[in-house]
Length: 318
Image (cartoon, rainbow, N blue to C red):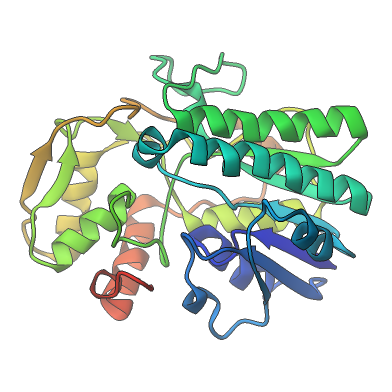
């Protein structure tokens, strides 16, 4: 079985490559990545084939999809704040790029496509946990582009019979997540600050809550979805129903690192969602054997990787 991963040099993609290499039946792994967010070093020691380039390159997609059984589409311009600063770039990659990936899969014939959507599509609804039947109300260009990602996938599934699975990822964290850029996610940003003896940057009062999901749990789902060729005409939340505030994350890191971590409260960012928690019932119906990693265990594994790799010292790599 050949699997194509777009964005495979990135944080989730590189973890997925390593997961797939442990699985029976995976004969070939091909990665497309333009290295705008991913790092070549992320795939060191793996057997994956890298095709360096953009998902906007139709000919590259045609080459990469030839003979593929499954495509895991992770390539994206991530980050809400970055999308607010550069909305059209987010649209081009996340919306147009997804349509190009789907069309390449359709041309190749009977290729399963798994796309990464986002919990941000729900917007600022007060309903918790967020279930897939809720109305979507994106409040940032990133969220709107991710709604386009999943909508295109489901439309290609309905219109052309393409086997598709649209997964709404919540706040994924873990090893290989880069901390050293302006739009770093919260946990690597916290760890980079802690390891550099700086206050942890908290936007707002820190009581905003998230459903943090360890990357190992995410790639377990992706691996099972590929193996069992799971497809569905509706989106699926990929998180496990936890509700943790940023200040609780700080407290857990203090426990792991065995020291106090000062906090620098900063202004709330445009487009940030206040409260997030997944309804995971549909996910667990589809994947009943999942055993998600607890937050404390995931944070401990992430801290161990940070202390070993020291990514905050190398902005151009992890």
